[in-house]
Length: 214
Image: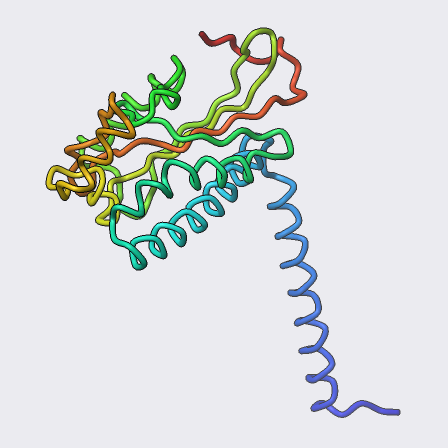
Protein backbone atom coordinates (compact mmCIF):
# COMPACT_ATOMS: atom_id res chain seq x y z
CA UNK A 1 0.00 0.00 0.00
CA UNK A 2 1.30 3.41 -0.95
CA UNK A 3 1.54 5.80 1.99
CA UNK A 4 0.19 9.29 1.54
CA UNK A 5 2.09 12.25 2.95
CA UNK A 6 -0.46 12.36 5.78
CA UNK A 7 0.13 8.69 6.59
CA UNK A 8 3.90 9.18 6.42
CA UNK A 9 3.66 12.06 8.88
CA UNK A 10 1.56 9.94 11.27
CA UNK A 11 4.06 7.07 11.10
CA UNK A 12 6.97 9.43 11.70
CA UNK A 13 5.23 11.00 14.66
CA UNK A 14 4.55 7.56 16.13
CA UNK A 15 8.19 6.60 15.64
CA UNK A 16 9.34 9.86 17.22
CA UNK A 17 7.10 9.30 20.22
CA UNK A 18 8.36 5.73 20.58
CA UNK A 19 11.95 6.96 20.39
CA UNK A 20 11.28 9.59 23.03
CA UNK A 21 9.70 7.02 25.31
CA UNK A 22 12.71 4.74 24.91
CA UNK A 23 15.08 7.62 25.64
CA UNK A 24 13.03 8.64 28.67
CA UNK A 25 13.05 5.08 29.93
CA UNK A 26 16.79 4.80 29.43
CA UNK A 27 17.27 8.12 31.19
CA UNK A 28 15.29 6.92 34.21
CA UNK A 29 17.23 3.66 34.24
CA UNK A 30 20.55 5.47 34.02
CA UNK A 31 19.49 7.77 36.85
CA UNK A 32 18.54 4.80 39.01
CA UNK A 33 21.82 3.08 38.21
CA UNK A 34 23.77 6.27 38.95
CA UNK A 35 22.60 6.41 42.57
CA UNK A 36 25.44 5.70 44.97
CA UNK A 37 25.13 3.18 47.77
CA UNK A 38 24.95 6.08 50.20
CA UNK A 39 22.06 7.70 48.31
CA UNK A 40 20.15 4.42 48.21
CA UNK A 41 20.60 4.00 51.96
CA UNK A 42 19.50 7.59 52.54
CA UNK A 43 16.30 6.91 50.60
CA UNK A 44 15.65 3.79 52.66
CA UNK A 45 16.27 5.70 55.89
CA UNK A 46 13.91 8.49 54.88
CA UNK A 47 11.22 5.95 54.03
CA UNK A 48 11.44 4.45 57.52
CA UNK A 49 11.33 7.91 59.08
CA UNK A 50 8.24 8.79 57.05
CA UNK A 51 6.46 5.60 58.11
CA UNK A 52 7.37 6.17 61.77
CA UNK A 53 6.29 9.83 61.70
CA UNK A 54 2.98 9.12 60.02
CA UNK A 55 2.12 6.33 62.44
CA UNK A 56 3.12 8.28 65.56
CA UNK A 57 1.35 11.46 64.47
CA UNK A 58 -1.84 9.51 63.87
CA UNK A 59 -1.64 7.88 67.31
CA UNK A 60 -0.94 11.22 69.02
CA UNK A 61 -3.78 13.02 67.29
CA UNK A 62 -6.20 10.23 68.18
CA UNK A 63 -5.06 10.20 71.81
CA UNK A 64 -5.33 13.97 72.17
CA UNK A 65 -8.77 13.99 70.58
CA UNK A 66 -9.95 11.31 72.96
CA UNK A 67 -8.48 12.56 76.23
CA UNK A 68 -6.34 15.64 75.74
CA UNK A 69 -2.59 16.10 76.03
CA UNK A 70 -2.47 13.91 79.12
CA UNK A 71 -3.11 10.94 76.83
CA UNK A 72 -0.25 11.94 74.54
CA UNK A 73 2.28 11.29 77.31
CA UNK A 74 1.43 7.60 77.46
CA UNK A 75 1.53 7.35 73.66
CA UNK A 76 5.06 8.76 73.54
CA UNK A 77 6.15 6.51 76.39
CA UNK A 78 4.80 3.18 75.15
CA UNK A 79 3.55 3.48 71.58
CA UNK A 80 6.47 5.45 70.08
CA UNK A 81 9.09 2.80 71.02
CA UNK A 82 6.84 0.09 69.58
CA UNK A 83 6.51 1.98 66.29
CA UNK A 84 10.28 2.49 66.21
CA UNK A 85 10.76 -1.24 66.73
CA UNK A 86 8.40 -1.99 63.83
CA UNK A 87 10.60 0.13 61.59
CA UNK A 88 13.81 -1.41 62.90
CA UNK A 89 13.98 -4.30 60.48
CA UNK A 90 16.06 -5.60 57.58
CA UNK A 91 19.19 -4.61 59.47
CA UNK A 92 18.05 -1.10 60.37
CA UNK A 93 17.83 0.40 63.85
CA UNK A 94 15.65 3.50 64.25
CA UNK A 95 15.73 5.69 67.35
CA UNK A 96 15.25 9.31 68.34
CA UNK A 97 17.71 11.42 70.29
CA UNK A 98 18.28 15.01 71.33
CA UNK A 99 20.64 17.38 73.09
CA UNK A 100 17.87 17.66 75.69
CA UNK A 101 16.36 14.22 76.16
CA UNK A 102 13.22 13.29 78.03
CA UNK A 103 14.19 9.65 78.47
CA UNK A 104 17.83 9.05 79.38
CA UNK A 105 17.75 5.87 77.26
CA UNK A 106 17.81 8.21 74.25
CA UNK A 107 21.02 9.99 75.22
CA UNK A 108 23.08 10.59 72.05
CA UNK A 109 26.30 8.70 71.40
CA UNK A 110 29.42 10.59 70.27
CA UNK A 111 28.53 10.58 66.59
CA UNK A 112 24.95 11.65 67.27
CA UNK A 113 26.10 14.38 69.64
CA UNK A 114 28.40 15.82 67.00
CA UNK A 115 25.63 15.87 64.39
CA UNK A 116 23.10 17.41 66.78
CA UNK A 117 25.51 20.21 67.62
CA UNK A 118 26.02 20.84 63.92
CA UNK A 119 22.25 20.82 63.36
CA UNK A 120 21.90 23.55 65.99
CA UNK A 121 24.47 25.72 64.22
CA UNK A 122 22.79 25.26 60.85
CA UNK A 123 19.36 26.03 62.28
CA UNK A 124 20.62 29.11 64.13
CA UNK A 125 22.23 30.47 60.97
CA UNK A 126 18.80 30.84 59.37
CA UNK A 127 20.27 29.88 56.00
CA UNK A 128 18.63 26.47 55.71
CA UNK A 129 15.53 26.59 53.44
CA UNK A 130 12.37 25.75 55.39
CA UNK A 131 11.42 23.03 52.92
CA UNK A 132 14.83 21.35 53.11
CA UNK A 133 15.43 19.16 56.17
CA UNK A 134 18.73 19.21 58.02
CA UNK A 135 20.35 15.79 57.63
CA UNK A 136 23.67 14.01 58.03
CA UNK A 137 24.86 10.67 56.68
CA UNK A 138 28.16 8.87 56.87
CA UNK A 139 29.87 5.50 56.71
CA UNK A 140 31.81 4.79 59.88
CA UNK A 141 33.66 1.88 61.47
CA UNK A 142 32.28 0.96 64.87
CA UNK A 143 33.91 -1.86 66.82
CA UNK A 144 35.37 -3.27 63.62
CA UNK A 145 32.05 -3.19 61.76
CA UNK A 146 31.19 -0.86 58.92
CA UNK A 147 28.00 1.05 59.62
CA UNK A 148 25.88 3.52 57.72
CA UNK A 149 24.70 6.31 60.01
CA UNK A 150 21.93 8.75 59.18
CA UNK A 151 20.27 11.54 61.12
CA UNK A 152 17.42 13.87 60.26
CA UNK A 153 16.55 16.87 62.41
CA UNK A 154 13.12 17.11 64.06
CA UNK A 155 11.95 20.73 64.14
CA UNK A 156 9.62 21.59 67.02
CA UNK A 157 6.10 21.86 65.59
CA UNK A 158 2.95 23.19 67.22
CA UNK A 159 1.81 19.69 68.15
CA UNK A 160 5.10 19.13 70.02
CA UNK A 161 4.87 22.24 72.19
CA UNK A 162 1.99 20.95 74.29
CA UNK A 163 4.46 18.59 75.99
CA UNK A 164 7.80 20.14 75.03
CA UNK A 165 7.14 23.89 75.11
CA UNK A 166 7.36 26.50 77.85
CA UNK A 167 3.63 26.69 78.62
CA UNK A 168 2.71 23.12 79.50
CA UNK A 169 -0.59 22.46 81.27
CA UNK A 170 -0.03 21.82 85.02
CA UNK A 171 -1.63 18.37 84.88
CA UNK A 172 0.57 17.37 81.94
CA UNK A 173 3.67 18.85 83.57
CA UNK A 174 3.03 16.88 86.76
CA UNK A 175 2.66 13.62 84.83
CA UNK A 176 5.83 14.31 82.85
CA UNK A 177 7.78 14.99 86.06
CA UNK A 178 6.50 11.74 87.56
CA UNK A 179 7.15 9.68 84.42
CA UNK A 180 10.49 11.28 83.53
CA UNK A 181 12.24 12.60 86.67
CA UNK A 182 15.27 13.74 84.64
CA UNK A 183 13.25 15.35 81.85
CA UNK A 184 15.20 18.01 79.95
CA UNK A 185 13.00 18.13 76.85
CA UNK A 186 11.04 21.28 77.69
CA UNK A 187 11.07 25.01 76.89
CA UNK A 188 11.34 24.49 73.15
CA UNK A 189 9.98 27.12 70.78
CA UNK A 190 8.43 26.68 67.36
CA UNK A 191 11.16 25.87 64.84
CA UNK A 192 13.78 24.82 67.40
CA UNK A 193 15.63 21.57 66.80
CA UNK A 194 13.63 19.31 69.09
CA UNK A 195 15.94 16.39 68.35
CA UNK A 196 16.60 14.03 65.48
CA UNK A 197 15.79 10.66 64.03
CA UNK A 198 18.85 8.45 64.14
CA UNK A 199 19.24 5.35 61.98
CA UNK A 200 22.08 2.91 61.54
CA UNK A 201 22.70 -0.23 59.58
CA UNK A 202 25.61 -2.65 59.40
CA UNK A 203 26.73 -3.03 55.79
CA UNK A 204 29.04 -5.19 53.72
CA UNK A 205 31.35 -2.38 52.57
CA UNK A 206 34.96 -3.36 53.34
CA UNK A 207 36.08 -1.64 56.52
CA UNK A 208 39.38 -0.67 54.85
CA UNK A 209 37.50 1.73 52.56
CA UNK A 210 35.85 3.62 55.42
CA UNK A 211 37.38 6.07 57.85
CA UNK A 212 37.17 4.97 61.46
CA UNK A 213 35.11 7.23 63.73
CA UNK A 214 34.89 7.36 67.52
